[in-house]
Image 1 (cartoon, rainbow, N blue to C red):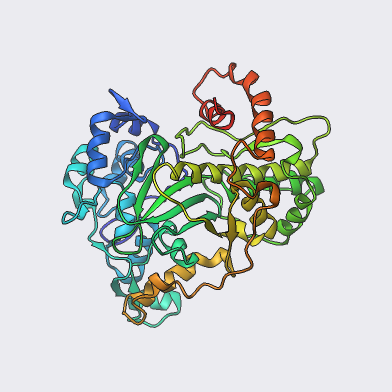
Image 2 (cartoon, helix red, strand yellow):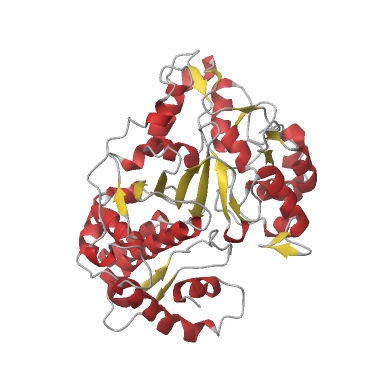
Length: 460
């Protein structure tokens, strides 16, 4: 943003991968662990509790603009996230909430040192003059100006609060706020998040405890870039194409999040009639690279074990199962460091379908419950944060009484235990995976996802 609060360029999507050279120069060089220079990795973990080891991390986008758009970079007054841009336009104030500051991965989480880290900024080449003052999510950060009021149809002087990003507010809106609560989100992206009381990191699996909207709490967070996006892809290219509807093709990083409509209900009905396991078809949900539990921007989605008998219905169900199995992989990865909850709160547009809820319960072997309007839990979380701000319901984020739970989905008997190789479905899944994937993986010449994925799915 420039000094007048105007953007110097268009924002970059969280899925943008253009800054590969900046990542290589800034972190991915010399002796490495988990793709990061060992010395910089250790310093970053000590200060921030995480590391900017992904090409999609915000700091590398900042460095890309500096390297490729120097004239734009000269105009920069403050470096803000999308939410903070909106706050600036409404109030004229340049601020950054704590969760957004942490996401830049130059935020010091150490007790008594919370705030922007000069050491991290010096190490990664970030100008500290570009960083805005940090506020809590529940803080009042300003009031709506006369100009913004006229544009928005709101009353001038209306209080504006810090709020939070999706990863912070969705857990609050889902009611997963107590220590040890685990929720799964399936929107455009997807994740597994568990509330913890300290910084935890698994650098090898790209999982870290991130700062959220709750003071003195972290969210141990594993993210899939394309979860609901895979279902949108299937809708566009396997369901709609069948009835000859022309679809405008857009770059995945530029498209808007899809609205779940009746077509998804129709797809859910169709796949509910396909046996669990999609008659042996397996899908890898990496349509725009993968971040966790392995980082590879070149990873791509694939169908395995297609036969002459395979139809579109099996392919569509395989996509849903592929996403759910990846979310199970997240749970297993988190369990290496923490205890996740036995009952999983499932939210986001993907949770609108009872069929998807049941498939998730079957894949992870746990009870899955959701809430009314699960696609709107982010807005609910924002409302709760605002309510906590003026202390009218100070304890609300701990009580989570604003959520009305719907009837939960229990795993079917076949999958009632934890999904291990001892269950019939897992044995079948593992056997088919070995038979299907092993012969083909020897032919891969470049770094790609099948290596770690095959090792995980086959137990090799």
